[in-house]
Length: 49
Image (cartoon, rainbow, N blue to C red; front, side, top):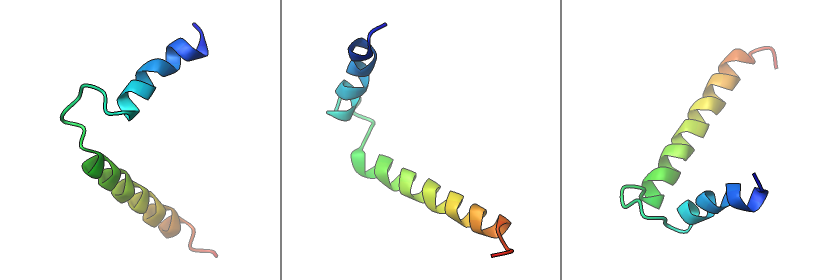
């Protein structure tokens, strides 16, 4: 499978795709919250610093 053929669906999805349920603000906000949660968990386990 070529790289172009594998990346084509991802490019389509990034440009909006045909998924009306994928709101960019909600997706970005959810990713931000998940990253903050992972950062918080990481700092809880790294108490020796």
